[in-house]
Image (cartoon, rainbow, N blue to C red; front, side):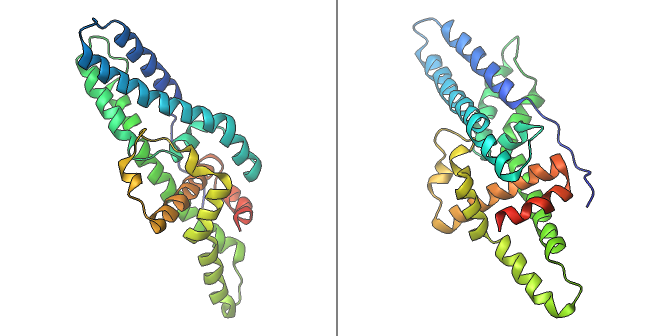
Length: 228
């Protein structure tokens, strides 16, 4: 499979920082009796601060681990941030878009807010890509021209890309603790054990989706043995 897919960076880290600074300025300008607005802006700041800290932790703690484990350097770290983004993040940026709609000098265009809000959807697409390229890589690595070994190939594929194996890889990299999400993700609180295992596996698939976008299928085939 040739490397044909690309994804442009959206400036997630920079935009979150700029939004935080602007909201903080707006809050500081509020009259003392505007308590409702003060609480709303404080809520925005808490959510943005939560995202900022998560991005910082990914950059300083997780990226070095992943790059060492996978023996590569990510040209676009933002794709790793997005790979770890939960759908709950949409709510934050949708609310900020509404807040800035009536402002004379909106910090971002509507399309930019939509891109930020879609980060969780993008993570799902990265996982979809990762799932597909992992399957193909397993076939390439374990292929044997003898038809008598076809069953072995199926079993190798099943073992390597199973949720339990990928979830174990996720735990090894501690991916669950680096996700970008709402400060309180009510959907996540309802996760049961099997669903948690699937979620962890999806995180690994999303990381492999990033590797594919950045380096192509050949690199995927080289690093698949690292998760056996």
